[in-house]
Image (cartoon, rainbow, N blue to C red; front, side, top):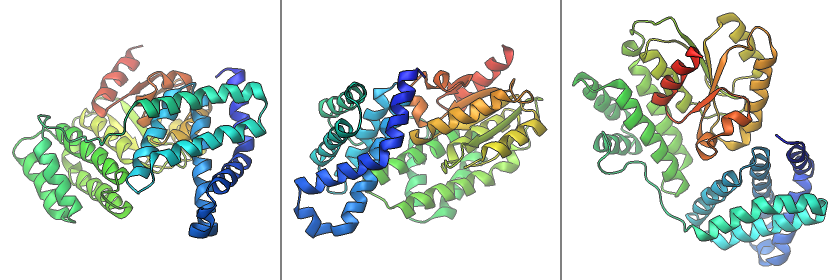
Length: 353
């Protein structure tokens, strides 16, 4: 990251809460009816949303990607729209963010931040909102994936497990089940929550049930012949999303790797101690929310600085790396992958270098 970008990020961080207060005051002064309708709870929610907007702007500046900020706005637009909040409210709130930045930061720095914000707003206005689906006609196992998801959303976990077991018994590849059923339905669950079709409770149930069903396949997965290669996989500290990196770890296990899956929210210091003990060939790090990009960068820096872990190849993956293809370079990793299948191919190439 260039010094100018570091300075902008530092200023945003320092002013984050003051900026959020200004945005909240601007919003309520322009819409006095909100005070009577929502009161202090409404102000608090407006403030929290503003902090979220600023945090995403910080990470976009950190990695020099206006696409990251636009994708956040696009996600927020759909999420709010499906809850009865029109797009104009989001646009207005981001406009208030510009006004707050103008009040608090020097003009030359404010202009640099406006460039990120304006590109995001222009992209938002030029690309209409659309509902996404990850279960597309003609794709492998799509009907089975739809049935699996319908069963989970109906609370029929045992029937969903039986469906997977039947597929395996008929000779269906476990890797294909992971890729085309587990992964796609998890994406679809996220889209359904975004579109206000299901609750957070439903989302958590589907994820927990899928993890349990994945575990039922472990006797088959862990019986694979080992190839002598070792992987450690985890999510960064405070990142609670883990099913994606767990799928990656299981793919490696199927391919004969000795895997050590450490789960979500892995503290840096304990991870580094574990790396010293196990001496893996590859460290795989997952980041689902862009808010944790900085933590991934700092973790990689710590791994690199230690003589006993500095030579470990580091691969990263998750949503932000699909939005910003060269993000892995910016945070010091050796590579990034967009899927569990691709991760294995990339890992093998890394070990040849």
